[in-house]
Image (cartoon, rainbow, N blue to C red; front, side, top):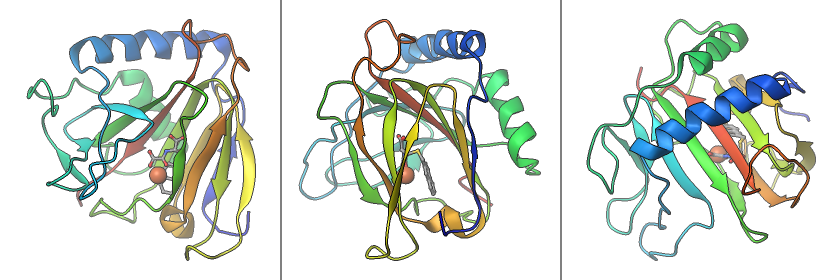
Length: 202
Ligand code: MD3
Ligand code: FE
């Protein structure tokens, strides 16, 4: 990977820690159910389902566009708190002075679920790193450069792997090409979950 600030920690979470994290996510989803965002303007649904924890959650709809807000778009209630376990991972890997404000949880279920090449730029504080945690089936992750047409390379992200994106990598294009079905037994219904911890405001 030729962009600086991209660090991968393969197998950071052992199976036991992964199981505990899934249990925490189950509690979050009970309170804040997964929903399927739609693209601004076109209203085309995402293949990925999402929910959040923390003071701010990421949402998207036809008229409001991509944004962070302090309530769940369906239940209209505040998001649940970010589990302590995730806050300590953030501290351990980033050493960043402020805690994450958003824990975005992406659910990939079904063969065709993917995330096209994009940049994350809905946050004000682009100097803070992003921490990404993979759980369940292995994903084929694509990482590009700062411009859409820069060369890309692909790596597999397995259950328990953590990647941090800081510096130049924070604004790099990235996406998920596909998820390899039945490559993990962590999630009883199969599929993949990705957690990203983000700072939104300064
Ligand atoms: C690089 N999620 O939620 S994680 C996303 O696996 C997102 O669900 C993918 O892209 C997933 O926005 C990829 C890797 C990732 C996440 C956030 C980043 C890479 C990033 C933010 C900035 C730069
Ligand atoms: Fe992203």
